[in-house]
Image (cartoon, protein in one colour):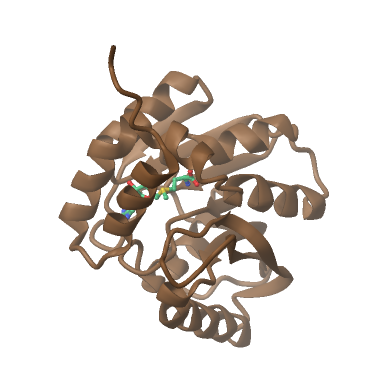
Length: 233
Ligand SMILES: C[S@@+](CC[C@H](N)C(=O)[O-])C[C@H]1O[C@@H](n2cnc3c(N)ncnc32)[C@H](O)[C@@H]1O
């Protein structure tokens, strides 16, 4: 009989390896390998980020959900759009650097379009000012997507549109998180967006490092793109 390796311990080893600093090609190769087990593994990890981000966005989104275009950046296998669909959103475009993750996302039937793009190296393949919502969950963290991508996320949103981002608040990610906090605040000072909500969630996902027990925390950032004349970035 085939041994079931999808235990917490197996997932812990996977997460340890992904949090290490790798270059972007290695990171994408890692996700190509992980794609087949990703959904099962993050379920074991009790990875709550897609649900927490979707709820936060949904609570603030006042308009017609069925008509809203959602850009799901670093969409992976589609967990974020699946949560948003349950909350009444219907139109999703997904972007990710891993072709294997995109293949799993394709099978969900949720997306009207899926695009392969290595963020930070290639320009986000979306028309400026075209999306009602831009959401990125689980990818703004050390060794993943560089903070410099925030301007591209902002650019993809319509004036008055929402940008929803998440990051982890565990010890390994604190330096990245502080860069993210600085960039988000700087963009607010520049008048590019205004803060709608920033919530630290205690139970983000189960801790895997030897120094932490229980759950690590994470943060959902929700910003609204300013409606004035958009500065060119
Ligand atoms: C932890 S998964 C999150 C997926 C999904 N958003 C979720 O919450 O389940 C991180 C995703 O980011 C993608 N990714 C990481 N770095 C990337 C980069 N530089 N460009 C594009 N995608 C990247 C990976 O391929 C992976 O699908």
